[in-house]
Amino acid sequence: MEARLNAAFREKTSLSANNATLEKQLIELTRTNELLKSKFSENGNQKNLRILSLELMKLRNKRETKMRGMMAKQEGMEMKLQVTQRSLEESQGKIAQLEGKL
Image 1 (tube, one colour):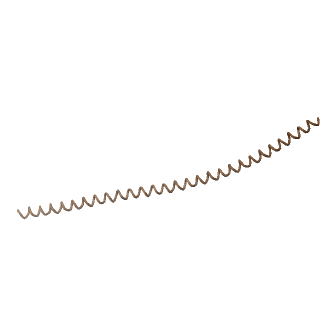
Image 2 (tube, rainbow, N blue to C red):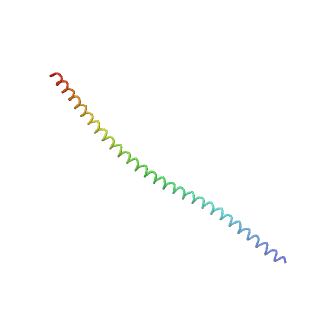
């Protein structure tokens, strides 16, 4: 009978040790899992950040191209305005001459 009690006690001690080992492993695996989740999330965020940065660069380039086009159009319009103003002044001068002759 005593042998059975000793064997049961040894088995209980062994199972308790195994349980403690498994709990430590579970804690370590949980930490590792959280670390991997965090790292995966960071990688995903970095990837999204790279995608957004690329999109931002594309939009900036597009904006700069449009701005250059608008500047060129504005310069063209200013030149046309100057030509038109000169033409108006010349026409007004001719009108004044013709009125002077009348």
